[in-house]
Each structure stands twice: as structure tokens, then as C-alpha cells.
Amino acid sequence: MGAGKSSLVLRFVRGQFLEYQESTIGAAFFSQTVAVNDATVKFEIWDTAGQERYHSLAPMYYRGAAAAVIVYDITNPDSYARAKKWVQELQKQGAY
Image (tube, rainbow, N blue to C red; front, side, top):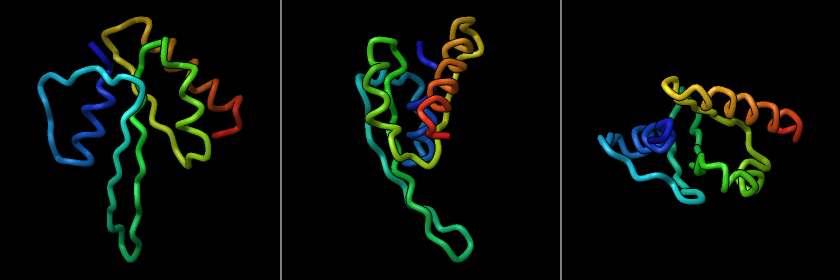
């Protein structure tokens, strides 16, 4: 079971919630445009796979990004440690 990244994205982009969501393989791309006051904000979202075997692909997706959302599963003790590693990697890459 995953941490719920894809579920968050689908809820934001399509207003959907699926009780069971297949694991993301590699990455999936979504976009959503939102009106905020007098501005329009376009979100271009890369939903990347959380499995370690896809970790080396991640820099392709976050390069040039303005923000990152890191999600972890509070029921999985290893999940928090992996989330911390993602934060450290993003900081090391100078992305945030």
C-alpha cells in the first residue's frame, strides 16, 4: 500500500477519490488551473512512483519545479525516514 500521493493528486485535479488506487509506475502527469483572486495559477504536477527502484528518475521530474509535496505513510515506520531523505535530496540539489 502506498502513502496516498496519487489519491491526493486525483482529488485535486479531478475531484475524485478512489478507495483503491493502483501504484504509480514511473510517473504520471496532471495539470490543473485555479483562479486565485485576480490571478490564474496553473499547476503542472508530476506524480512520481514512491518505490525505491524509481528513485533515480526523480530529478527529471523535479528539475525547475517551484514546489514539491512529500507524502509519507504514518503507519509505515520506514516511510518517514524515506521522506526525510527526499527533503535532503531536494535541498542538496538546490531545488528548495
